[in-house]
Length: 455
Image (tube, rainbow, N blue to C red; front, side):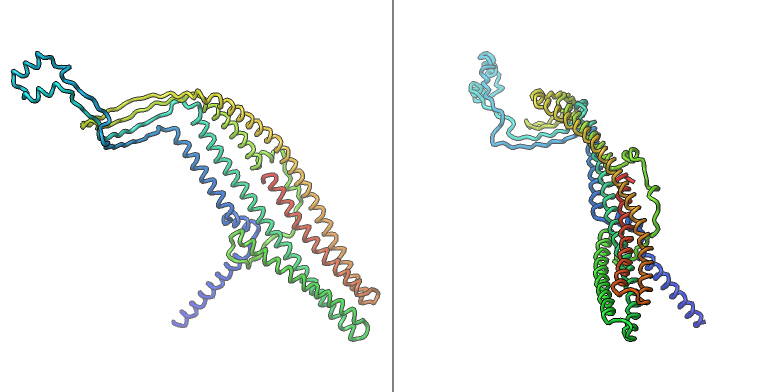
């Protein structure tokens, strides 16, 4: 029984190890879409752009609160060194001699008190006190400033979202450029490895021929020099690949630089990417931003007009005071009308200035729209040219391969020199490198066209 348990445990451990190993291998292989998705989630530029969107959203919500009454509370306590109100009261002015004689005869007041009434009495009030109030003011008419202010805040939020989209496009573009740079260098490294293998074979053949006395020692030296050059190229390529892997990992938030890029070397016709440029223009974030700029300038013009119109507000409040050793509270209703009379002079110039800025935004929309369409056409022309260059590069590979085969046969037959053979080898390597450059250039031109058309 223990034996079976041990066997089952070993099987489970083996399967677990294989599963984990497979997961690690799967994680180290990245397609272009996985790289772009990682960049969208981990790049610091996009995080800051998203925070700008969140801030704009809070600003829009802040503007919405202007529709509601403004409620304020005030409390006030004071204790002065003397009363704020003072008055002298002369009771003799209010009590006639007959009344004073009657009071004296009645004995209601002492004679001393009655005598003091003939002199002025000093009185102070409000030496200390407490005041408090709660007020609510509701704007009724503000020249459209609240409505247009909310619309402008909404435009600001839309602009921040479009800027986030532009940031996403730029991050994706940079990540994809890193991706194709690595692909290009790795393809060139494959070519160098193939050339290295080829030169090893040539070296073996020449070494045998030199020992047999049918080839010159100089031929072997030429091969060895070319091998040194290829080894130097290999070191340079590995260094560049290492740096680019670090850059891509940092830019996209990858945990390791030990990964493999999965891509399709087959080339599709660019006709599948062609778009109607006039229709594509309407979907580009650049065009939408220009439209938002016109919308914002129009709202700013309306706000300038509204700031020079009267404002009307109504309100209610509750007031409490204790100024004369006796507390008292009362409610009130109020209405206010504010007319910016002295501001009309400067305000008229502000309105004209905003109107000019609105027209500038409209002109900029029309002009930049044409430039955006020209950029789309230019990007498409570049795509077509890159596709044709790729076709030429692929034909050159076939010719260089055949040229190398013939020169190798000629050298073995003794009808060409080692310099001719090595020249053919160099043309062979250059043909593959040009094809690699043409392939990655075509991918980059497609990338530029997709971004130009807002795809």
